[in-house]
Amino acid sequence: MLARDLILWLSTKPSVTNTIARRGMKDGFARRFIAGETLDEVLSACATLCAQGRTVSLNHLGENVSTEAAANKVSDTYVHLLELLHARNLPGNTSIKLTQLGLVVGRDLCENLTRSIARRAQELHLTIEIDMEGSAYIEVTLEIFEAVQRASGNVALAIQAYLYRSESDLQRLERLQPKIRLVKGAYREPKNVAFQEKAAVDANFKRLTTHLMEGAARGTFFPAIGSHDPAMAAHAQAEAARLQVPKDKYEFQMLYGIQRDLQDQVFREGHRVQVYVSFGTDWCPWFMRRLAERPANCWFVLRSLLAERKT
Ligand code: FDA
Image 1 (tube, rainbow, N blue to C red):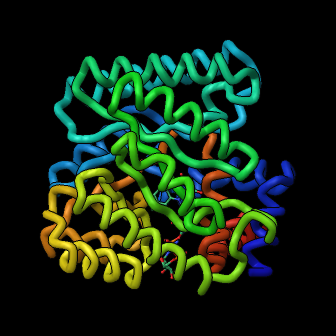
Image 2 (image 1 turned 180 degrees about the vertical axis):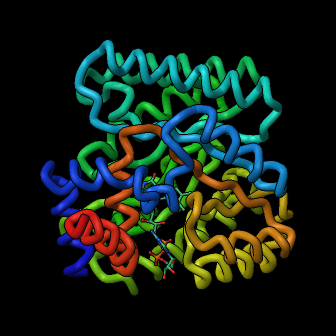
């Protein structure tokens, strides 16, 4: 927990993030998790994954956009991505962060941009997914999700198992019959809102997986199990079998470059697997959260930075 907190704290320090950002792509250590900085690079990574039977969710990295012009530009990028997925016949969608679509500039701006991306996706018979960010944004994210899902019916939402409130949020969302991406949660949250111990987060993840699978059996949820934890995957598979949920009524989701063996194993066992593929130049905060999830990942970054000092 200490190492995780330290890395999440360092991720707010520009002196650290600037160094990592300067070296990450050049030295290659960031490429393990980020498909590339350009559209060409990411589309080529997606084509490879789709040829292997995976679907993809494309995320253009960035968060906390602070001007309307920048938010509009992000929205244009997402519409362009959807059009490219459609034109190239790549099975997939886009994952968006509301703070990247101007949430901190204005709620109406953000909701309108989300609506327009979802509408364009609907025209192309595609879907979009909304990531869940820090707890300060949860209520407004739920409200925007509800509004846009009611209007276009093609939106999925991430729900974080580390939050105490998530079970009641699922009860609230069930009437919209959504696809829910269940994740453990990647931010640093205080103990008045979130479980702090891994065992408690894992237990809640399993409980919410069961809740989602029961919904899937009733036809009210499409569960997307977003985890690299073999124990979470095994629980989801057992619950799907117990409740006789057909394999096309739920899926597993994992991040690009992480636990590829588990991705292959789950896929070989006949389950749907969607890979969340991130790209773009603004990758540092996202990359630091991946390091925080597994501090052992820091060694290859440190080795690379120390090599820089020697040269
Ligand atoms: P856990 O952290 O317990 O890891 C289980 C095992 O997986 C580890 O022992 C290790 O072997 C491997 N592993 C996990 N992370 C690794 C890493 N970074 N590098 C290498 N190995 C790793 N969060 C959020 O707050 N909002 C969101 O919208 C999303 N969206 C999202 C989409 C998808 C598709 C996934 C898979 C995850 C997210 N997350 C997220 C991140 C999520 O909340 C969580 O932080 C990570 O998935 C890590 O938790 P695990 O469930 O993988 O288990």
